[in-house]
Length: 285
Image (cartoon, rainbow, N blue to C red; front, side, top):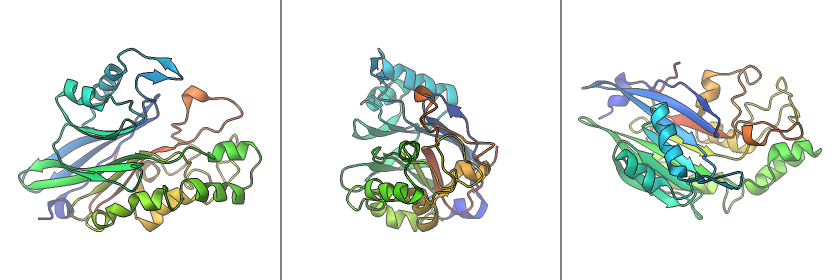
């Protein structure tokens, strides 16, 4: 049954958290049920129990509080410090934890765990948001290498060509980069008319949609063809939800990295993202 395709749509809005979060509220019309409203969070809580190398007692309580305050139904947590089990237990939810760094917690049942490529940089879960009729979505959670970070490279005088070379070395690397990590989901990405796909994660790189000729702030050096986001958008067909709704990066930068480490010598970027693919998906406030 393709209930999502024919009558459904996904409604998305965004709220930025001070802890590197981007939130989406989505609703899919299920043929026999009417609208279903779901909130998906992509969040890096900085190891949950440790922020800036300072111990935070009961850090999982802050994660729970943020999920509850935002009305989140599904959260992809990066650098979550092995708090997923406690968070899920407190909320009475389901969870899938691949490593201490990556986990998905969900109010809705996780019906299938979908490990990513070697090293576990990205994981995914098939989540059942409706039983009658059956409707699943796939949500990923992951992070890419943080080495040779583009803004740091720009701030030390690297050229666009040098920055792209660093991106290819780290985040497009054939062993641990985005292509290898997303390869296990090829069949899922070919089936998004039936099962919408949401890519959530801390990709540790700015977007080519943000580094434009018009958006030349701080250490940003104008238009740079940053390959990770080009791959997500152009090769995999995963639309950048925030930029779809807020197309002007000058007016709406959406920076998530980082209010904790803001100086004049470091760039401020949007590196925590949700991209999506699915027939009938649309974005609203």
